[in-house]
Image (cartoon, rainbow, N blue to C red; front, side):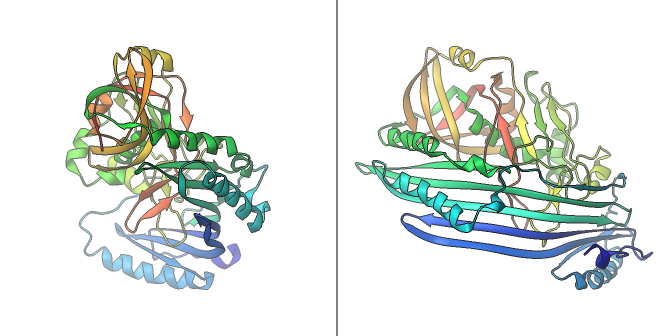
Length: 457
């Protein structure tokens, strides 16, 4: 492959070019109720090229290596014609030339297990769930993805690297006296397959919560102090704040560029938010992005102050800011876009107990259950919660959503616990067309909001 691509950018007809070639293997198994809906292994191979000329860019994909040079020539012609109509010249941030090979080190490789063994594992969890009281239906899904990638550019970089991850997700439906509730379960393996095995007790624990939900009352709408558990806090910081840290989201939005200038006070000094691809064993771990840049730890908020942003070489040049190594593509047909790696709220100095003791009348809300954001407005669901009275956890509540405005909500974070937890399952959707990225991690400790708008069913 490398011999075939040798010299692809040895031409004076472009200012800059890069190419990413991928060999991708994917396994999927889906079960609904007692029926297997899908089971497959698939392989696809291809590449993606970007060409820059006179401040203009052209991108394209190919499936066969023999098409790479033809694709390059077509893109060179397109970029030259495009420069005549370009309103603003595209610049790239200067970057170091990198030559490296780095591959995933794994002790219990999911690729060493047969398709039959993986099917048996998913079926075992599904059958266990169906046997439990009040459970009326289930959906379980296994996905495994391995991508071996080769990146070269016209500046001399040449990098070989890979991505490996697998997970099991499930939805369990229960019904009692006309009340129907759903509980999600997820086990992640980034990359150790052993993380998916022997999880029966965890599954039964989730089903126990589901059964309690059938007898719980809906939450009473109002404005309350709340404690959010790490799983929900991680989803909040990813969706409500993390995407506004991606420079391509705000590049052409003057209002948000004004609001999100470095040095802006985002919250109390206890709040620090970080994006870090260097954390091994997490969904968003990588050394190099798909633009050939080293992934770097970026402190997005430092002691309550906006301190960093996630960049491509284009946006780093446009903002006159440092590279972060956050350009990523989910598959060979896509051009990379700016994405979070592992975004998380750093540990605070309080204990979980202290958070509870600070609330006389409020709620403890747990786990994300869908939601949406629009600019700085957000709405999230919580799977379940508990009423807090005089610092003590009381009865369970259900049918919960939280809504608000990002900047005021960040200001309302008054306590942060010391129990940082990373979600096992990665995932993020972004782009047009949508790129669903399983290699995007989230984490947080317990956090307290002095006041939040809480809605019922």
